[in-house]
Amino acid sequence: MWWYFEKANESNDIVTYNYSRENRNLDGLISIDKNTGMVSMVSPCSNDSENDFAVNKAISKAFYLVKEGYPANRQVACG
Image (cartoon, rainbow, N blue to C red; front, side, top):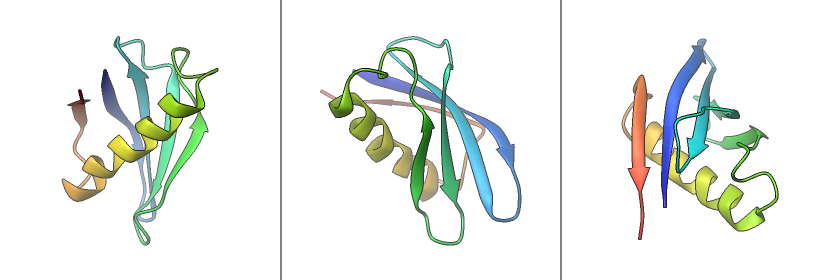
């Protein structure tokens, strides 16, 4: 499995990323609070929309974005 994240917007407090799993459709959206590092799912991508396991994995993979200082884009693979 792999996820692709692309930065959509960044403010002083919040960064949002469009994301997708197993493709680059970027039809999902996550939000990261820069003050707390908390990742929130705004809307899951089409491949994750009916799969809670995949949604949770996408959230966990988004922590790489926090760790790496909110890059413009990032692909993360597992397995």
